[in-house]
Length: 304
Image (cartoon, rainbow, N blue to C red; front, side, top):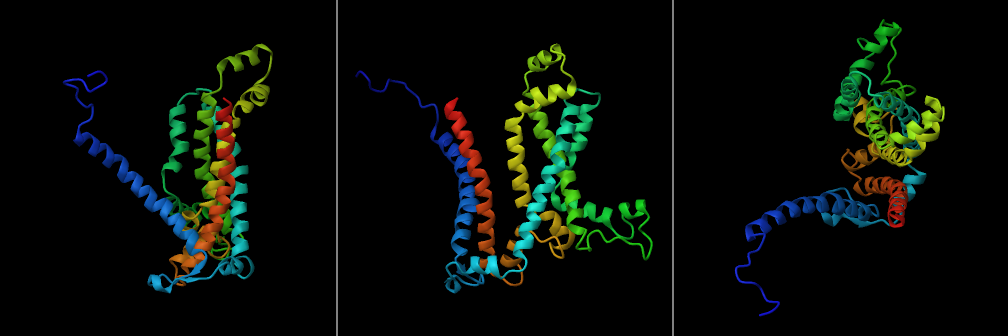
């Protein structure tokens, strides 16, 4: 019969293959939905309630009470917001140009560039918790490297880099910048690989120097990379947690929004609704950055 199945036709995928593919795709999708979407939506819902985490029958609707208390009565909230802003400003102003500089040097194909690239990128593959422990040793008032070098390791001359509220945030930012520089270096190095060599050759023929070539030819072509760097830096500033938690638990001058979320949800207070409200504020700030970026990206794809 015309249009009917041919004799001897065999399916490309057996039932076992379809089951295996479904399992391989279904399990990660289920985990993603459960651990990301369900928890995010649950946090949004719990932000409008009061709950001590003991039994679902103790959940009570609170409306906007958590947010009003957060914005007007919590003495730690606005300092935490300020610290997150400072965290972003430092990560943008220090590691960004330094990472770009290192990428430019490695892009010149100098000797042992692979070794340098590995050395600069090594802190990125180390967790923030481990970095925190390492820098705790460096900042140790008695036996730390910094105090030993500057001669502040004697009684009466100690500098408590982690315990001093005027210094500990900046000490944490130095450690965070050390790690973030290697991350941005790799991003910029990938962006530089996409620069057309013909543009540089044309610039050299026109008599442009190295700085002029970078300013007028290379840097404009790095616009997509700069956008990614900005988004990554904002996200890093918002999700900063591990380092300051290892340093001093996020207290005495290192308060961050992520620390407040943890202290209220899994701390002694067990104010899950209140902690969820802080998490919703973090989510709103993140979406305010990510959504315009995605909209701009999709708009450019449609035009192209």
